[in-house]
Image (cartoon, rainbow over all chains, first blue to last red; front, side, top):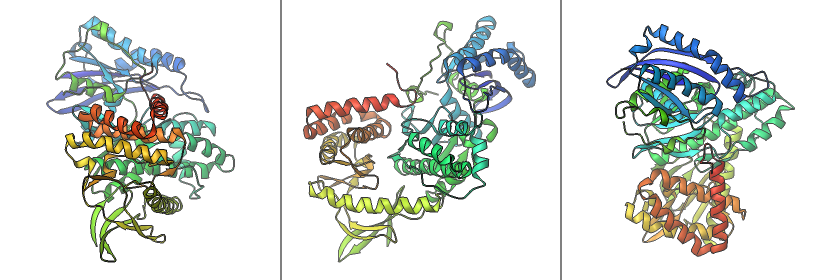
Amino acid sequence: MLGLGIESTAHTFSCAIIEKRGKKGKILSDIRKIYRPEEGEGIHPREASRHHIGHSSQVLSDCLQEANVTVNDLDIVSYAAGPGLGPCLRVGAVVARSLSSYYKIPIYPVNHAIGHIELGKLLTGATNPLVLLVSGGHTMLLAFLNKQWRVFGETLDITLGQLLDQFGRSIGFASPCGKNIEELASTSSNYVTLPYSVKGNDVSFSGLLSATKSVATKSKVDACYSLQETAFAMISEAVERALSFTRKKELMIVGGVAANKRLSEMLKDVCKRHGCKFFVVPLQYAGDCGSQICWTGLLESQIKSGVELKDTFVTQSWRLDSVKVNY
Amino acid sequence: MKLVKKGAEADLYQTKWQNSKAILKIRKIKTYRNSLLDSKIRKQRTIKESQMLSLVKSFGIPAPLVYFVNLDKTSITMQEISGKPVHDLSELKIIELSKDIGKLVGTLHKNGVMHGDLTTSNFILHQNTVFVIDFGLSQISIKPEDHAVDLRLIKEILNSAHAKIMISSWKNFLNGYKSIVGHAYYTKITKLVSEIESRGRYAQVV
């Protein structure tokens, strides 16, 4: 089975082709174009969608070329239908619909967050993990139960990605700022006390964001270090709580912030204490990409025959715990 | 000493305190945390938990007795409550006990205490009485918002770990809660719970 997946939920426009054989999948190509806002600014939905429109046909043809296939070889096409930014989501949906209607290829709307998880499972080999999904759009702890991903903990306000980005922008970095903050943080070891807010398995970051901004007026370096130490310790504690509550023996971390080394290091330590296997999605596939969407679409195609064109929706707020998973 | 449980926050050992069975709860160093932050958290929670265990007993919440606190080792020696956590009981039993849990949470809130970690593992059924444990994240608070956070957490746990019986156990919990705090306060808190949920990421926006 050959699938094409289209991702356009936020700053990334990406197309990918995966060949599925039984339970195995091989990524033939994964091409991305990322919208970069100016320094100190965040994603402007309209500008991002214009960026996606401008690059969509080039990305698609590069993707086909690299995989060495033609549109006619494709068995299915899937697109990220949410959650994400409305204008951006529509770009991917339009590309998918055009291909589907012109070439008569079955089409599948896919939940972006589930895409992160499914590709993570494919690439890491985790079978029944507690999942930590940390990105610009999500900070969630999930476990699979009765055909649905269930939320065991999440952020009560902003996500870990937003926390890093919003702080990073306030000191002049351009989104995504995680890498810059990590680099700056590694040069300090001076911990300044910041608000630490764990509520059961849930976390809250908004107070931490304001407090870190005020520390940054004295020292940017200490602020970055203390921010990472505090926020990641909160996440690690929530993970520990969820691990001990669900008694899972695997932890998988997916999403853009999975690329952060300090966070992985902390979580590795947590796993060691709980005798649990640690999986982290390969760096290249941590952020948003077409492969996530493509693989999930391929999984869905095992049990469903695609949707009618009139049912190819996009939804800005589509929670992953509302999706029934039957494959 | 026998290790009984490796919890998220602390390790629990079975021990003796003046000839009666006891539990030693030690909050061990977490090497992943910055050491300054770590020792602060462990000290604070040890103090908080021991104070709160004594306080809640004063208004009739079944909770373990504190025998001894060692701040240097961030450990608490307390009465052992034998029995199963509600989490491990049968579905029917959990539905039934949800009402008792609702009453206990209502009583805590009425007396200005927020538990902070309301999961089904933190209630133990001991000789037909439900005991409340693990007060490490608790706070003295009469703020309705804090009480609502408590309710949201247990709702989340029912919705995830006990998804099959969520509807009936949540209903029972709310009935128990209402019977203690009264109709007016109950309405206020449940409204706040919906508000908190709507602030969540990608919540159904009405």
